[in-house]
Length: 114
Image (cartoon, rainbow, N blue to C red):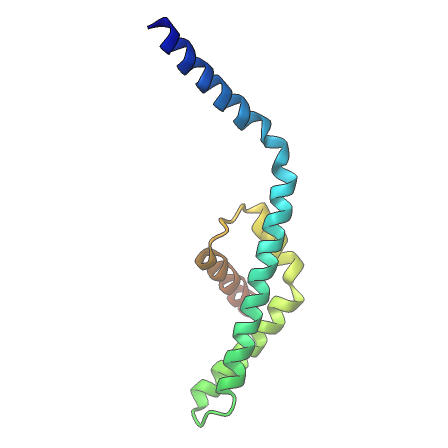
């Protein structure tokens, strides 16, 4: 019985120490997040430009206006990429595609309403 308790205690202690010792790896994690966020922004820019190219020749005024909006969004994301990455890191935004896209859209729409 005491051997089981000792082994379980050692396993818990090892797990706690392993978790505590990984804390200095935060700078490497930040670099990974920076690269992930940058790739996400680049993909969003490509998506906006693709939609704009597709809809620019539409007969619909609404779709042409949406194409113009997508061009403005791509320009905003490209111009403010560093600022957006820094904000995402500061806010510790989860690296999930839908959260990143929501954040980027939100920042763009806030910028045009100022």
